[in-house]
Image 1 (cartoon, one colour):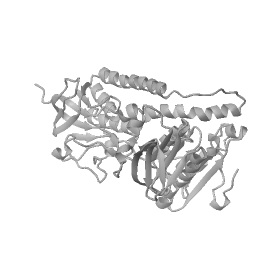
Image 2 (cartoon, helix red, strand yellow):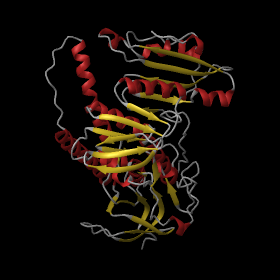
Image 3 (cartoon, helix red, strand yellow):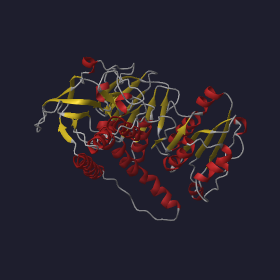
Image 4 (tube, one colour):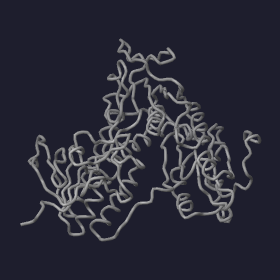
Length: 464
């Protein structure tokens, strides 16, 4: 009789958990995956995938304006919110089904229900309507991949607001919305609502949006958002929200009031550890409530690992996937592997979008002292043609002593696509002379990155 029911028990069927489970099962291990909601996790079900569909939908308004600028005669355009939601849900169901199929093909067992850790080798799956998987299961190894959940502030009337989870399922599109927060989720949803014709206010308590991003990126994007009609309110927070006959009345800390039809909180996400039973087995949490792990995703408890957003390292889907793969390689393929979290590129799907990899200018100056900055702000060729006022930002941060490019920051059309290629060079340690030796592709937006030769001096900044 086997010592354990499974070689690996994975709690959470998101991107990181599914990748780890599939690879482990493909090695011949007996694997179970417990999921309390739907297979696919935050990214597929209520995160980057449905959000990107919403981004695509919201970009059409600017594309229509561009079309008119290029000679097209466009009739009155109407947006069918309910039809869009239906089609979005159909596609999400298809993608979730692919995840399920891939798990099954790999030989993993999918269990439906919320899982709790009983001891270092035992997991209990709680009863769930329509599922017969409830019960206790033993496993040689346990992997926690439960992700994160939206966090809402606590003040009078906060319960009247929604989070990104509910924003994907609004029965009707509001005419006026306030998005609260300054991170990438807040900025993206503000752009989405604005693009769909919603009167949008972005409220953030800090001095500027996108804390942690390069300061030039932050300033540039805030200006571009306002150009597009988003009201950006900085340096204050909510005191209260009240329901009125006309919607919701938000009173701010500076006593300003805003009346909207909806308030969406994008004020951060917390690691989803509630009710997992971590205290029973000695799994340590940090001050953010995230599971503490080592370079190979091992927790402070024997036989228990964790990957993805629940560890609060870099909360991105591709990172969770790589962490899950590294765990499986280490534990089931006798191939000790750790994922390098340095120089990971990221994107903000705002309008205009942002692409970034490596250090900000401030981080590089703090780390190295002397750095060289190459920076360009310009109107893209496509926009200039019809008198558009959009501006792009491109910036290189270069370590002065060895001329290594340690940061690349782009704001403008297709910047997420551009940064993916730039990330390869930065990850490999490219120097500025090597960068400059690359011949430009013309005419493109990206060619500006390889044609910047003069170091940026702030006092010389002008307009184009």
